[in-house]
Amino acid sequence: MKTQNTIPKIVLTAIAIFVTILALFPLLWVIIAGFKEKTEVLATPFRFFPEQWRVTNYTDILSDAVFQQAMLITFGGAIVFAALTLLVNASAAYAFARLEFRFKGAIWLYVIMTMFIPGMAILLTSFIVVTKMGMLDTMGVLILPGIASAGHMFFMRQFYLNIPQSLEEAALIDGAGRIKIFTGIFIPMSFPVFVIVGIGAYLGYWNSFVWPTMTVTNIDLVQIMQYLYTFRSERSSEMGMLMAGSALSALPTIILFLIFQKYIISGIKISGLK
Image 1 (tube, helix red, strand yellow):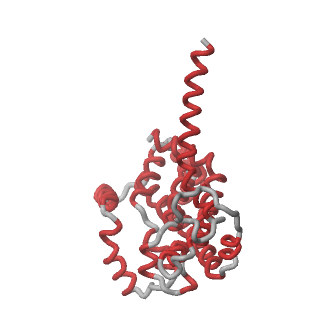
Image 2 (cartoon, one colour):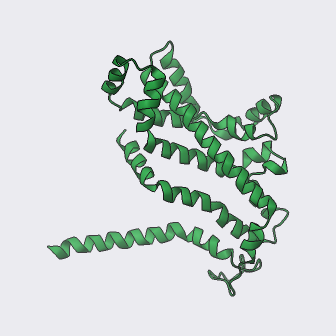
């Protein structure tokens, strides 16, 4: 009987290890390729490990002032973007979940419809709007246009709909207003959901390339993906530095996932129950 239970566990463990190796292989290759000479990265036949381990790619890119600036400005922008995304979408989600107002159904339908419009379809019109507003080459053009998200509103609204109505009714009886209820009851209960939405917003900002390329030319506002792209154009021979820069640019995201992994799992469980 014990043998029958052990064999499936061994098989599942082996599958889990295999899938983990497949998932981590690209990241491991990028990290190790950062220790290669620039001619080794794309050399044939393929070699996973370098002939001679070198740290010059990492030291050179870490000493690059433009790389440092791009990492800092992108990280700061991503944090602000994630915070504003949570504030705006959580407030809207609470309103749609708990408040009653005129044309609520029609407005919610209009919001949900935007989920089915590809971002590329409105890229040109969005660029024209921000140009006429004089927002080019500012942090505002990178942060403000993408804050409101129908997908995030929908996810949060579904969570708020499942919070017991009795909690809100008790708070209203005690004299609490809607803002007090939202900040005192709903926000503290929303931490797992906030982690999921916040990290999603952070990743969306961090990995953005097309929009920053269209709207930002100021070297002081260059985003990390714009910086890394220069290795595919002006600096195409420095592939080792590109690998080192890619590995370092992934580091903040990896750290965030390690810090919030417990809440990410909780959020995924919550989303599966709604």
